[in-house]
Amino acid sequence: MTASYKIEIQQTGDSFDCAADDAILRGGQRAGLGLSYDCNVGGCGSCKFEVVEGEIENMWEDAPGLNPRDVKRGKLLACQCRPKSDAVIKMITMDEFVPQTNPQRFAGKLEMIRDLTNDIREFRFKSANGFSSFQPGQYALLNLPGVEGGRAYSMSNIGNDDGSWEFIIRLVPDGKGTNALFKLNEGDEIEIDGPYGMAYLRTDAPRDIVCIGGGSGLAPMLSIARGVAAADGMDDVKVHLFYGARGPQDLCGEEELKALGQSADR
Image 1 (cartoon, rainbow, N blue to C red):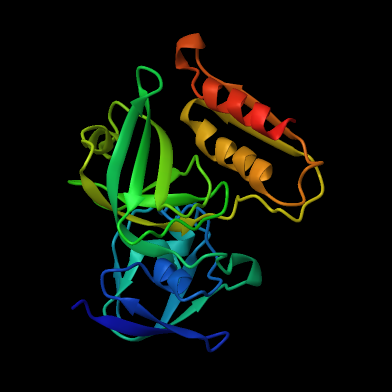
Image 2: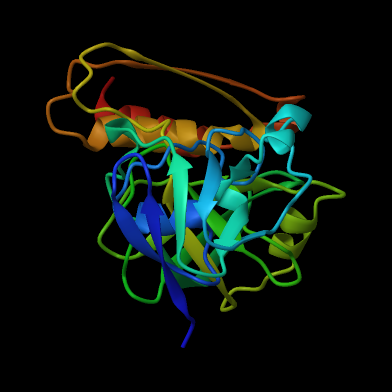
């Protein structure tokens, strides 16, 4: 059994148990705490924190989310650090970061692969435990064979009752993550960790919505548009979706968008 440690946030006194193989940020999110974050993969710097007491393992010392001044001041990234003992930390927490659904780590079986263009594919995974609760526009971390650290990809579908997690992903020629993903076969299993992300649909917003995406960036836009169509009380909300690509051969999702427009009648 993996060891776990108690992490206390000095400013609030809140505490949570974090597994030794889990990032502090994600452990806090699993406990339902509003630890500040955005990208979850070391790039944005939104999850900076300081260690007051305890021992922490920094998994990526050169993460771009920290500048030299941050390093000099002893700042760390909660998405790139794991606990090695009980610890007390200083970190920003806000109600807006409290997860709508506490993220989970679970096994996902690859049920379907579909080519959308010469380098963009649609993948559908099904969770072994039936979990598939997330907000339109959120993302999950896929832990892929031979790749260190999870890779963040936005879902293209919406939360559902059948355990489905769908993604539209472009193959990056030198990308370790997408190359590992594109080598998977139907029936293979990977670990999925999610949901995460703050750029999700707010169903209480009365205004029209503008979505802008390109290439495989259609995924979260499609999820948001589908979320609007499925939501109660958003019949008068219009979605203006602007989608671009390098050329006609790189466009995808036309069938899905047409079907969505017809079903939503807007």
